[in-house]
Amino acid sequence: MMTSFRNLVRSDKGNSLVEMGLVAPVLASLLIGMVDLSRAYSAKLQLVQAAQRTIEQVMQQSSVESDYSAALKTEGATAAGVAESAVAADNWLECSVDGITWTRQASFGGSCDAATPMYARYVTVDISKSYTPLFSSRFFPGASSNGTYTLHGKAGIRVQ
Image (cartoon, rainbow, N blue to C red; front, side, top):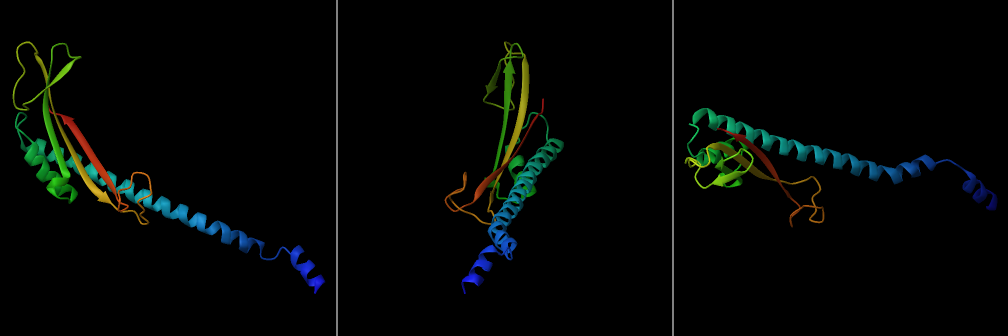
């Protein structure tokens, strides 16, 4: 019996199976993590593209000095497949004397006074959507209490 125990201790048979058993869970979790990250990146990219399409669509239909908020929310919700409450639209007017220091004005459709002859109008859209990973946990960095993440797709343009 002692000789068979010595032979068993010196034998190399089965080492690769044991090593594979130790490494396989690590490799599987890395693979699942890469798939999950690529899914999240794809979802974020879709939101950014929806925000860009939203601004393009509204710019083709509206005049430069009108208020875009309602149209941006409706178009953004349709493009991204989310509720209108998940779309934040903003438009503003900035005035400047020297082209270096800009002051944000309250009214988008208004005009700058004679002391600030330079002006620029901007439009931005921010679309948010919840993303649930394959293996969600509230202990992951940036995760909410139920293990989901909020992704944002932002786009902006200077219209004048």
